[in-house]
Length: 236
Image (cartoon, rainbow, N blue to C red):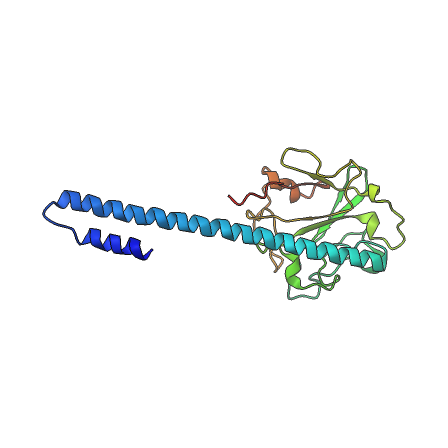
């Protein structure tokens, strides 16, 4: 960068009687500097995107481990927390439904849809406080709340369910199931990503309206238990 500045200074100092040539040289030097800055910002943008994806992945791993530990202790999967709860309220990150689960009933900030097999699926945010996690674990790398979907029957303490009874479907960008079989998924953690399509902020406000016409619109339309996820982790 120092050499570039020195070259630019030298170019600017050569403005002589050959005014046209000198101005052209100056323009080329300025354009060259602009291109270099553009490339620099592109590199920074790729690094920033990579950092945000890594943060999302790290938080998902933390949440998954906490859910596994919770299910081993309580014999059930926790219910989602309200998507619209503000971080400064007592409802933030707390499972709805309490110890009875949430297979039935209506809960503020949590959507209820029907899976392909007819089971109720609840969609909300990560119940971080119920899982004894920090509030930031509810957010992806772009600071939108993860969508947390769970098959309702697995939230009941009296449930005796097989993993094959999971009623959530996860599809890749080609419309193919990402699971090894058609047994369904018990619960899913889905990030809204860079576009924040339909995502909610830590304060419970919707960041962007749900664009149902987009690929990610399937994740925020709340009309079924199917979610689209991109398997492409390219940072380009």
